[in-house]
Length: 187
Image 1: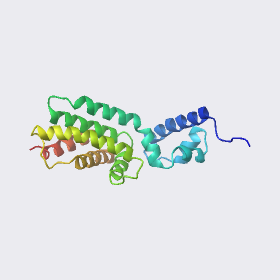
Image 2: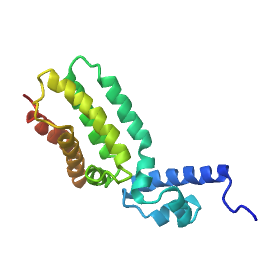
Image 3: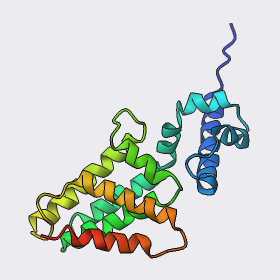
Image 4: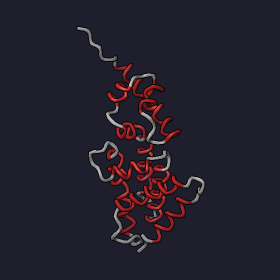
């Protein structure tokens, strides 16, 4: 009996091509880009795409792993900052910038925060943990109210990114909305 499975190197090349094309398609058309088009541009069939990524959220999760690593690295850098509130604000700005990278990402991240079975929760959970540490330090310093939760902050950052996505001509909107939000965080 002949083994019809692709060689490991072929499967890896297909996976990398799919990721490359998914990044490009998400950048051009947002996270709702056609999976069939991504498969076609990668030179593989839709079945191959689904073997690597069982659903859109799994593909998005794979595409965003590099950004996730950057955000987690940034949170570790900020964890020892002298001004915990400033560190939290800087990290929230980085979250908004990340959620704004691809049209539709903020909406998908908001949905994933309520669905632990979503493949995107693999992005959401470590970000939540990193943010919890930064928020905790800011609260301990007395600069952020004790009743503020990281879940609320992450929903707010995604909402800000979503609002900015709806009005791309206003390049200052996200920062204005974040500043307005931050006024309500202060103790």
